[in-house]
Each structure stands twice: as C-alpha cells, then as structure tokens.
Amino acid sequence: MSIRRRSIVALLAVTAVLAVGAFAAASASAQTVVRDQITENLSFPFPAGTLCPFDVQASAYDVTQRTRFYDDAGVLTEKTYLVNDTDTWTANGNTLTGHEIFREEFDYAGGVLQQFIGTGLDSNVGKILLGPDGGVFMGTGVGRIVLDGNFQLVSFTGMPAVAMPADSTAFCAALR
Image (cartoon, rainbow, N blue to C red; front, side, top):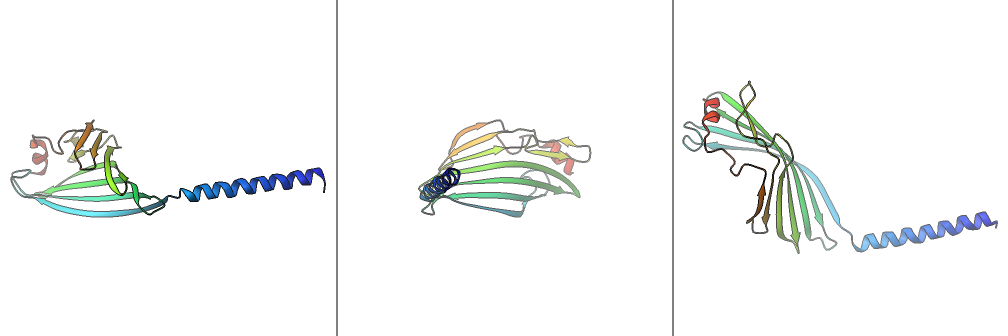
C-alpha cells in the first residue's frame, strides 16, 4: 500500500472515530424539538357600556408558530410562540382592524414554569386603524414584559401599560 493510500485510510479512520464520538455526545444530551403551527379564530362581545356606549363585537384571527423543547427524559424545558394576530372590532356596520406580531417565551425547570417573556416584534404592535383614512387609535411600541413562574410582574418596558387607552372616544366614534 502506498504512503498516500495509507494516509487516506488513516484520515478516514480518524474521521470515523470523531463522527462516532460526536454522535455519542449528541445522543447523551439529546433534546427533542417539536414545531407546529396553529390557527385560531376567537370572537367575543363587549356589551354596551363596557367599551363603548353601544355593543361592540371583537374577533381575532391568530396564526401561531409553536416550538417546544423537551429534554432527553421528555420533560418540557422551553416553548416559544410567534404570534401573528389580526383583530377586528365591529359595531353599527363599521369595522376597525388591528394587527400585532409578538413572541412569547416560556422557560421551565423540571417541567415547572419559571419565567414568561412576551416581546412585541413589529413596529405596528397594538395599532388599531380608524377607518379608511388610516388614522391610528392605539400607539405603536416594540415592548417587553417579563413575568415569573406565577405570572407576577418582573419587568415591563416599551409598551402601553393598558390594552386600551382610558379615553376611547376616537375608537367609539369610528365605530358609531
């Protein structure tokens, strides 16, 4: 056997040993990742006096990309959701549309939720358009909220502190 051929055989043997070692190391700390996508259509009423002086029907269409991570024992360690949400608000024959994209992260230890992080990803987060002129009722904001495993607030930055402003006059006027 020539020196060149022996060198190639030796190189292949070393490569095979390294590959088997890497596979064994990866198997020892195997993590299962499950990905899927779900869609949801939700609808809920706001009776007169709760949001506006008249009934308002709200609906949401969500497309959520879910990723869940499990350790080698099959215990959930983390899950992330990327949510693309479109909302409609309808009353008196008028419809307003809102859109937001956000990410939710859930961190677990021993299968027990330790922390939740919600992050707005779109500069249009929380916007509700007021009619065909494109006026905006709610502000923009890319923000972040962190909750502990009991859903107690840890930190909150960059987003309005309430889902709807205290003065919903423009919103209700657009639906009148």
